[in-house]
Length: 166
Image 1: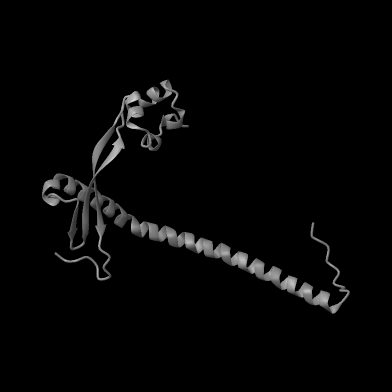
Image 2 (image 1 turned 60 degrees about the vertical axis):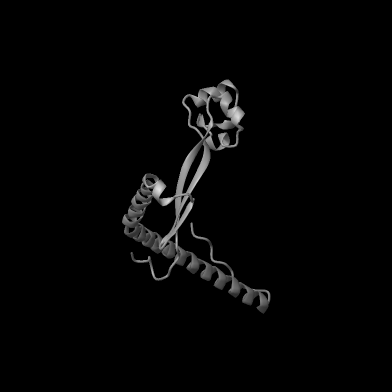
């Protein structure tokens, strides 16, 4: 049912002017809401188009990152001869030995056995981040240990002219 027409008798001119402002504000707010809906629809279309355009480059970047890590691992002795950083024309290769908790078998059962609920995620899986904070002695209690692991990474030089040519 439609709202009955409002009576437009105002006690003073100030009331009439104020109601005019309210009317303009309401109309402008409605126009803005309509524009926002159109804007969001255009943004969604734009995002979809650009995601599709960028997907091959993202896939290639992922492959290149895997390849450079493999290359650094295979050629570790040549690349990192007594150093942990090698600066090259297009960036730097970085080598580090990090410690992490070894992913031992049956760890969840062992954690439950010693009532270590703080290291058990709700999904009944091991909370590896929590185990990283445990002492080595506590890790031994559940049959695992901290091990050294090689970590390779790289940095790119920021050059507005693009990569250096070999």
